[in-house]
Each structure stands twice: as C-alpha cells, then as structure tokens.
Amino acid sequence: MATSRALYEGVTGIGLEYVQKLDDACGCVLLVGHEPTWSMLLGALVGGARVELPTAAMARIDVEVEAWSGVAFGTGALVWLTTPKILAGIGWR
Image (cartoon, rainbow, N blue to C red; front, side, top):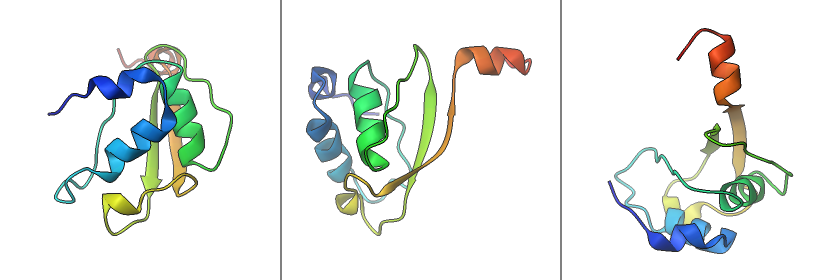
C-alpha cells in the first residue's frame, strides 16, 4: 500500500501521473480520495463525462493498456458506479 499527499490537491493531472507511474506488476489499483478530485479524475479518464461522486461512492474504470504509463484521459471505460445508499438497498451492509 502506498499513500500520496499529492493526490489530495484536487488536480486531475496529478492523479493521472500517479497512475502512470504505478508498477506494472500490479494488475489493478484501488484509489481512495476526496472530492472534487475523484469526480474530475473519473470524468477525465472516461472521456470528459460529468460525474459527481457522493460521499463513500465507488467506481470501477477499466483501461485497455499494456502498461500503466499508457493510461491517458479518455482511455477508460466506466464499468460501474455505486453509492452506499444503493448497496444498503440490496441488503449489503
């Protein structure tokens, strides 16, 4: 697990750079952070969509790249987005 204070600053370019520098041995990554950074980053990764993540929301973005360095804005596909209210509604707590 790694942490980065730079991800807290609210700049989507910093988030992208962080992802691009990930070790390619990692097949997937879980990023946790605050608003509005994550809504802006998610939107940019999937091609400029306007997304507003409520508190504790989770989203899955798939990218078809050979290496993390190949991740760029617009290369992601939003697979799902869920909120605590949705999860509570299906009985998962």
